[in-house]
Length: 273
Image (cartoon, rainbow, N blue to C red; front, side, top):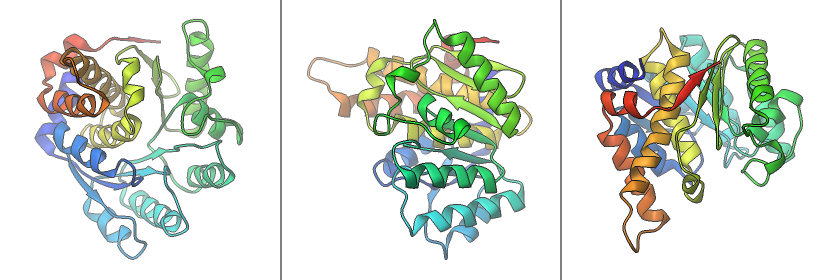
């Protein structure tokens, strides 16, 4: 199943428009290329509608939003909605500041979103209209653990049903849900948190997967999460003495580039609830 999602990405080479943050824009582009997609970056309001029109999907990331890019997010999002293209929102740091929180909530209100992907604190902020994060990281008090898993699954499924979109919560345990089903995923390594932008990379990757698999978007989103986590495991297994987080970043991208359907099927660690 997940292997088919991977093969569809490589076969169709989805073009993804990214309005993403300037901290990780290069890595997002490289991950999209590595997975078999094609990236394009544009965030000027005079440009975004045309660019969105020629792409298959839109990835909106508010990590370094500003007064120039905020209008572009709405223009691109509405154009994507008009064309029936998938739209992913990555509400980076929602809950950390008034601007981030209000912008994320307004995007959620005015756009038809296909996927919302974030950490548990960001997702709770969108669900309740306010919250707190540790910078752009999840608050430890919100963490999804084995002890809180049942409640977290119920929360994510309920929110997905209410909003009519896929909710992807990433952390030590990942949850990818619609209103009826939730994939509980246990791929990845804690060391991935020492690399800036693995979440941003995943959002670009996930957009490509959703675009390339229009008939099974929930499974495609879950496949992207498994792939990213598995690439983290494979990349870590290839680390050598003297390697650090910069090398690890590259090894993850290389693992995505070299991933095949069989490796993903065998390495994906998930259950359906």
